[in-house]
Length: 300
Image (cartoon, rainbow, N blue to C red):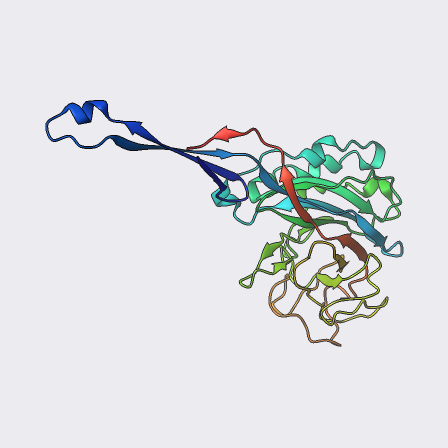
């Protein structure tokens, strides 16, 4: 009997035996005393999951005119091939009342675009939000959504105004609420990139510690009000490291307008956001992989 792992999830067992050949020997010309028989089975024992680390720092600007929320979610860049994950565990189990009672609706219909397990982690309205981290399936990437309600930070009754018809592009004028998604996925070199629905809206810096006192790969943590910059873009998160995220809550227009095209050169005033990338700041523990529970089943 021989057994070995074929992959991180599949276990193969091959059993062989020498079977006596009494009938073959009785036949004219029969000389085989034994005949080798073999059988093979493959069992799938577990799968991997991506566990998001908790934030070590959350800093949302309380001076901004806009009301902002930051969400985490799982994104499958190959959702159209792998199939749609229809459950939203995060949004399903988070329960809010009062001015936040609308938040669970924000995840509605996002599964069809490969986004699932939405969890609200912070806002700049002083809300009490229970800390909960999403768990992504193998092949999914931990991503972030920004919900932006224009000029309503100090008016909680307006936080959800028109949220059901919120815009997802700068070209959708007349909207009072917007959602922006980072949709993390690997680039051609395998590095995880957060580009999503608004390029040049997010700054990322990989760090060696929970306070980002030691940025890696030449990155720097900028100070407040450093406007009209081109944001830094870090390589992928690494287990045991930390990632600094800095958002511009009103996305830059860029030279292609409506969030597309190349950014305006550093030092050039952008007619969209002020490009200081300090409206929302997070330092997150990098996600890590671990075994996920699954029923063992025979697949071959």
